[in-house]
Amino acid sequence: MDFEYIVQLPMETVFAEQKSAKKAQVDLPTDAQISGGGLVGVYEAKQLHFHWGSADIAGSEHTIDGERYLMELHVVHRRKAIKEENISISKGDMAVLGFFFEESENENENYTNIMNAIGRIHHKGDTTFLNVTLQELIPEPKDLALYFRYQGSLTTPPCSEIVTWTLFTKTIKLSRRQFQAIYTSQYYHGNIPMVENFRPVNKLGARQVFTSDSRALVSKLCGYI
Image 1 (cartoon, rainbow, N blue to C red):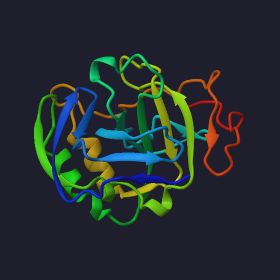
Image 2 (image 1 turned 90 degrees about the vertical axis):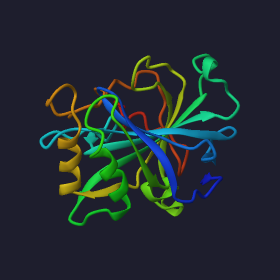
Image 3 (image 1 turned 45 degrees about the vertical axis):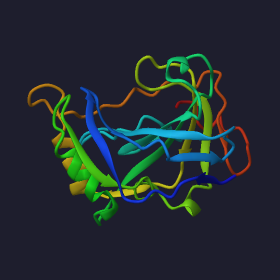
Image 4 (image 1 turned 180 degrees about the vertical axis):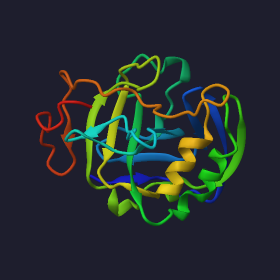
C-alpha cells in the first residue's frame, strides 16, 4: 500500500511559530493532501512539528522494539471536509505521519531552511516565515512502503483518541551539529532550554499494531508505543 501526496508542492512560504512552551510548529498550506496507504479517503496536511530529547537522552515519542530515536517528526493531517469544531467526535478524523531521526556524519541540506527558521523562534509566540516543501523534509516516496499502523490518540492535550498513526521505518538523518542546534535554540521560559519535549511512552493496552508488509499484528513486539 503506497502513500501518495496528491500535490507536488513548489517551494512554499509557510508560517513557523513557537506554538507553546513545548513545541515549534510549521503551518502547512491546505493543498497538501495525502491518500492511500490504507487511509480511508483524503486528508489535508495542517501542520508539522518535532519532538526531541537532549544531548544525553533520545526524544522520539514512539519506540520500536524498545528503541527510542533521537527525534520524531509529526506531519498532522485532518480528514478533508471535516469541520474544525467537530474534530473530537470521530476516530480516524486525524492522520499523523511519524518519522524517526538518526545521527549522520553529514549534514542534511534539505533541512537547512527549517533549521534556520527554528533558530529564529526562540520563545513562545515568536514567529517567522520560511521557504520549504514537505517533500524535501521526508523520505522519497519509494521509501514510504514500510510502516507501522495503529489507532491512537494525540500526544498533546487534549490527547483525544482520534488519530490514525503511521510510523515509517525509513529514518531521516541529521548531523550532530544540526541536533545540537535544535537542543540549544528553543527555550521554555527565559533561558531554560526546551529539551526532552516528548510524551512518555505509554503501554500498548488493547491497541493493535500492524505492519504494512503483511498486515500482521506486531503487538507482541511492540508492547509500548
